[in-house]
Length: 104
Image (cartoon, rainbow, N blue to C red):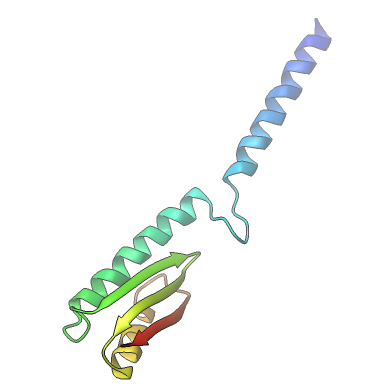
């Protein structure tokens, strides 16, 4: 009976460890909490870009991974590229900005 209890406890511990490891982040995957944080940052950056009159009508895509924001798409001038980068950097929670915007 004690062996059975010990075996069940061992299985429960292994199950819990596996569950927690599945929620941990790696270099290429984010945890559930980081994913939610990144979604909030993406939304804030998109809103900030939309609120900027010079950038409002441009095709700017925003993606965030672990606080690093990537801007991509097409803009009409180099000034728009710089402005979009500045706006993205000003958002709370942004660690860095990778600006891949292209002038069309």
